[in-house]
Image 1: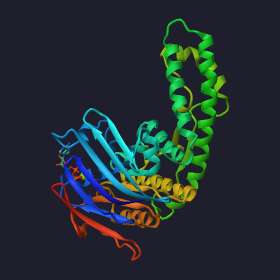
Image 2: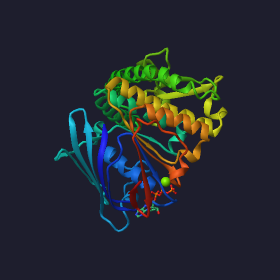
Image 3: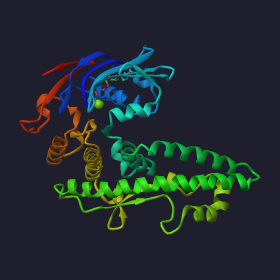
Length: 362
Ligand SMILES: Nc1ncnc2c1ncn2[C@@H]1O[C@H](COP(=O)(O)OP(=O)(O)OP(=O)(O)O)[C@@H](O)[C@H]1O
Ligand SMILES: [Mg+2]
């Protein structure tokens, strides 16, 4: 997947921006507040119909405007497809793919699989398990059509079960129905996630090799309940606790990716910079695995990374990004000369100067 052209209207400070990115590396430079992150925000909007920084859409729409729109021509294995996404101040979606209205955001996400690396994603290691579950689920979603309906069934099942748990007098026959649905869905989701992580980890280890100052990490998938017990047994054992707290304690909604170093939680031991590198490598590993299994490349939006890393590690990451066959959109340098990296001659690099919401190509 490559974005061939973009038209951005009323996204943050971008009034109307048109450009044709390079299929390889695109670098946006300019002073603080010029609009670099806004360009990445617009590309994310095209792929996901939402913001990568917040669950709210209003801050993404330019002040005083009622909506924002991003159009893109995307080359896919089946030829070029036009995609248009409009979000309104009231929260509505208008999505068109090849001229046809699309009601399902997941269809859009499948067209432009997007990976974000920004200061927020660095919380992947130290943040809540939800972040790491979402990380695993990105990969499973893009590989397995079965995953999304399973995940939706899981959400419904948990909602129903938790409502019953909070009901005062428990209807055990109803609870039993939702328990058996939960067990079926959980086993399927667990299998898909476990299989995905098993294939991801060797790629992660392989990319980590040149980052020799980071100790070898142990990364383990936790499925969300005791590894030696079946979920139906765990649900039975937990029932009093579930009733007293009003929610389901065990299940795939508690899955996690545990990253450890000498049996300690890695984020307690690694330096901030080392944690950032590990997160970047995890994200790059996902892109490589995606490419391996689907023969398609995902888009990387990399915001403000050079300022987060030292030159040596920044160079190593650029080398990896360059070999990924992905289209990359990078920000974080103030000037054209600020990005100290020697790209190979085969790599097409485009630099865009961003100034007060306008782009010029150098
Ligand atoms: N909804 C909005 N409407 C209009 N302008 C906005 C809106 N939201 C943010 N802005 C402004 O858009 C400008 C560009 O913001 P952006 O985050 O893209 O800058 P940046 O180039 O990434 O800066 P930095 O180098 O500091 O990261 C800022 O001046 C910001 O205040
Ligand atoms: Mg920025």
